[in-house]
Amino acid sequence: MPATPSNVPAPSRTDPALIRNFCIIAHIDHGKSTLADRMLQLTGVVEQRQMRAQYLDRMDIERERGITIKSQAVRMPWAPTESDGALVPHILNMIDTPGHVDFTYEVSRSLAACEGCVLLVDAAQGIEAQTLANLYLAMENELTIIPVLNKIDLPAAQPDKFAGELAHLIGCEPEDVLRVSAKTGEGVDALLDHVVRKVPAPVGVADAPARAMIFDSVYDAYRGVVTYVKVVDGQLSKRERIRMMSTNATHELLEIGASSPEMTPSEGLGVGEVGYLITGVKDVRQSKVGDTITQLHKGATEALGGYKEPKPMVFSGLYPLDGSDYPELRDALDKLQLNDAALVYEPETSAALGFGFRVGFLGLLHLEVVRERLEREFGLDLIATAPNVIYQVAMEDGTEHTVTNPSEFPTGKVASVREPMVRSTLIAPSEFIGAIMELCQARRGNLQGMDYLSEERVELRYQLPLAEIIFDFFDALKSKTRGYASLDYEPSGEQVGDLVKVDILLQGDRVDAFSAIVHKDKAYAYGVRMASKLHELIPRQQFEVPIQAAVGARVIARETVRAIRKDVLAKCYGGDISRKRKLLEKQKEGKKRMKVVGRVEVPQEAFIAALSSDGGGGGETKAKK
Image 1 (cartoon, one colour):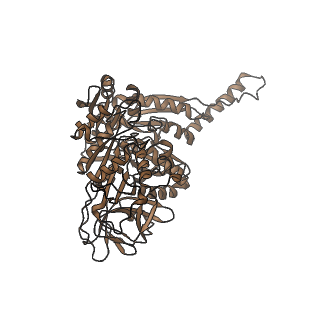
Image 2 (cartoon, one colour; image 1 turned 45 degrees about the horizontal axis):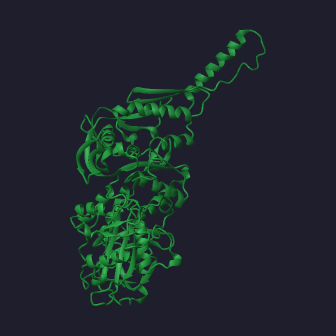
């Protein structure tokens, strides 16, 4: 058995040969954060009295939902026993990553800072879609993969069966698959020993000019930007001046150290070490993820390879309920963008909702989490418009338009509309093949291939329009497969689609917030649904209000909000009918004039209700994947 860290003398200067950088990757809910908890306890970096479940999940949203949103890096000491009985103290830098498909970008950045990864699979559920996606990411980064089965203590666990599946997938023997229980701690010490033996040490040139790669950044209200780096070459020391190679901005290193798991300052970081830097910078744009840091004097000339920029998959408008909160929303998005490098946004205005931002997200859960963080952490009240994707519209006169918002859809003769497509992987028990195929065909999907992972489990690969899966696709998939299916998707180019823009008109005026770009076959259903919803939500006026859904100049659905009738005859106590008729005619003229000059006021509550419940990503993302 390895000795506890209290018996282990810490090395005075960390030799790169004694460093192991690895991360934990898995499908959502397969036990990554619980395994990280056991590692923290076993290595002694967190005292028993401070320990709590999901220790590395710091945000309230993460703890409430039981999901990891931000990757967390932590340094742990560990001393495996050598064959001659000697204890050799090692430094393990471990990164706990998210499992949800929307946060794959966090995983890809974490992999770039590691030499190995622990691929975790639930022994009761087996391989799922995100397991495969993360495995392929690790293979692209040429990492050493350690296959591990978790939850072997569960009554429903089938470790022998899933060890065979995992071995077949990676190309190893079933005996090579480690078996642990993150809950009870069984097998975790053997896993740490295995990490030390199998994961290669980081390689770098110690006496070369310093090069450190930024793999994450967070904004701290008191200390400014905290930058997480992995040192590849050379050494960074406290109080020296550094340069960001992409922006050429220079700063002084006020503090440097490692997370273990709380911030622990040190004198510097050497080759292969993972830690944090604080420069006192408040401008979030000066610490760009993927950038290379070097010394200001005699620094490196060649930067390290960066990351591929994440491409937003889903766009939604975010508007403050109170227009005066617009500057606060802009500052909040600036700060959140540092914590979340995948967030992109630009200002936009809406006739109905005022000033706001068009924000790009990686998926619906990402949208929901960002909105919740803006409301909680910055005290903002927001309206989010229905999510939509980017379309490329070609006109008959040869001009091309990029449409991120339905209100930008050009008027005139449209030659073609190209929509983004995704390559999706669905894994489910084989009894549900028919239900899944029926669902995918209804969403305009094309079957690309099908493989049996085992006798009971099948993998289906479909090409689907992104617009068809961002609303309620996952909900429908779960209900048709009794919750057994898992889904993963990635962009796969564009394709011409038969798409039209549906406008919602109130008394002949377009309301841009309710417009949508939909497939021609679904335009009528959307128009009817939106018109009937607004009919319920818009209060009655002194005059009749027609609500129409139109494609171009053709009205496809209509509802009418009846006028409130004031009783002008209440003061007539009998008398000639002509007197009553005169009053009714006068009222009729007044209403006609009011209809010409009157404007329909849509209450803010109606916007919120219509946009949030219109399949725009409300509840379906809470337990997604």
